[in-house]
Length: 204
Image (cartoon, rainbow, N blue to C red; front, top):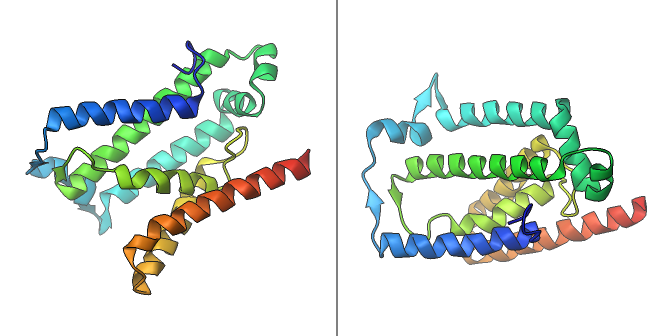
């Protein structure tokens, strides 16, 4: 949809979110899937040498993502496309192919995250993960990635997720009602976008 139909990426992503949500609600029919095999549950809740297995997965994919983005030609081409797709195309970069790669990797990472999440919870419902959509966007923005493209790092996103987690956990420790957490997350997103726009204007 993004490369062939030229639909803006945000609209394509948001539209497919609802399409897949509808299919999931139809398939699940209000049921809950639970009781996954013990081997599957080890992915999200198992331990190795005293550390949770998801921590090892985090380190591995954080390293791979950082090396790919910062140390490969493909990664630099993706930054160039994000900064100015027209200039990137005129420079000989295959924009459509690189965008396909970006969204394929993004979808794969989302799928891996969902598998880890399911294995930790040991159950699945049709609306599982909906509450994580806004925090995922907030973590990326807090980590310094620009909504306008061309700026951001994988490690920065990790730091953004860590900061957001500390803020929300701090609210829990202070006995702040969980009903306030979406409000705080929304404010963080708005502030991050505003700071990004202000920084870009100064740079220009």
